[in-house]
Amino acid sequence: MVYLDAASGEPLDPAGREAYLAALDEGWAGPDRLYREGRRARMLLDAAREAVAELLGCRADELVFTASGTAAVHQGVLGLARGRARAGTRIAVGAVEHSSVLHAVDLAVRRIGGDRVVLPVDGFGRVALGALADLLDQGAGPALAFAAIQSANHEVGTRQPVSAAARLLAEQGVPLLVDAAVTLGREPVPEGWAVLAGSARKWGGPAGVGVLAVRKGTRFAADWPEDERERGWVPGPVNVPAILGAATALRARAAEAEATAERHRELTTLLRTRIPELVPDVEVVGDPVDRAPHILTFSCLYASGEALLLELDRLDFAVSSGSSCTASTLTPSHVLEAMGVLTQGNVRVSLPWRVSAEDVERFLAVLPDAVRVARPQQAGGAAPGTDAAADGAPESAAPTETPQPELDIDAVGKLCPLPVIELGKRIRQVEVGGTVRVWADDPAARLDIPAWCRLTGQDYLGEETPDSRPGVTAYRVRRRE
Image (tube, rainbow, N blue to C red):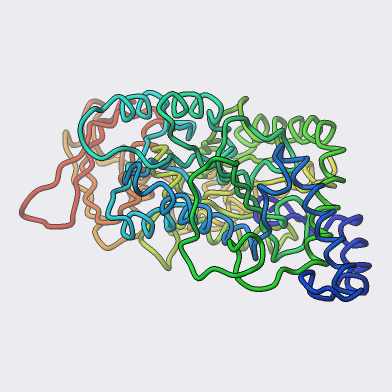
């Protein structure tokens, strides 16, 4: 198996594993106890805290360890919202933040009686600083409690303008919370944050360890039952062996980060170049340059994302998908939706620390066949291995003797990618310059039909929502060629 899902969790670092196993014997006792074993555990915990704090660029007494990266995010959001409730009740959050941030912000605004302001992103998934500046310039309405912007996007890898956003916020004394899970151990920590969260399993540490750092002077108050441990911010005992393993892994990764980033960037650039050459009707998403070096994401027209991931798994490649557009749900990825890009057949390749160039070449070798399998045969009636299937796109239906000026396609009740498959099959039934209306109730069609037009050179004319068909939208396309 070739593991290409490091953005979900990196394999355990060898140095971190060794430290973790050794600490099972040396650091098992409660670090708050005064007897010898407790003091030894406290020494190991303090050493781990110092090491992580140094790499994060903060003081040791500004850092606590949590039960996971998700817990760090939740506690960071809730603690900052409660601590800043008197200063402001609005929370600004990027549209492409991780779901853990979005869920925590929703809970926080309910508790403080405020509201969430979503900052839009561009087509690469980067937060629009102009929207943040406009929000800060608004004189009326509730004040801003804080903003939450990730260091880089977890699905497409695009770096966020953290330092520039922090400068805008600092002018009005508004703190910035940064979810740095994607980049910790891989890139320098961006400047300007007031609260920082991360996950050890993303840098090769053991699962079950998160980090939460809060700058001195930041208004922060626990919004959960307090405990005597970890400054009262983290309830329950900490896992000293796992924390020591996490700190050791982070130090090992940081020492190699620059060289590894250069190697990963070469490999993801290779993927970015070769995939569109090997696979027809594919859209590579995210910023091509200003991105986390180990993440590459692409989407395939006409393909089922679930089928594509399962086929790659059958071929011994573990990847993930940012798209939730499968047979089990009607909701596409909120990241891809905010970017306005194709959601079909979405694949995220995220390179682990020790990936080889041979692993990437093997992936490129099997990908075309995997995509053909994932593109439903009912698209054009062709089975894998036939000429129609080899083209990658659905076989267009034979045009009528007299092409029509207009055509309606009823795809109501069909999930993606079926509405676009129908459009691809029947577009040539209208004359050049003629229009097609695709009637669909799948939310993913709002993204996928405009993306189909971009990839195939047709004109997207917009959408209609007739009162006579509640919940159904008509998407209008003009045939250009």
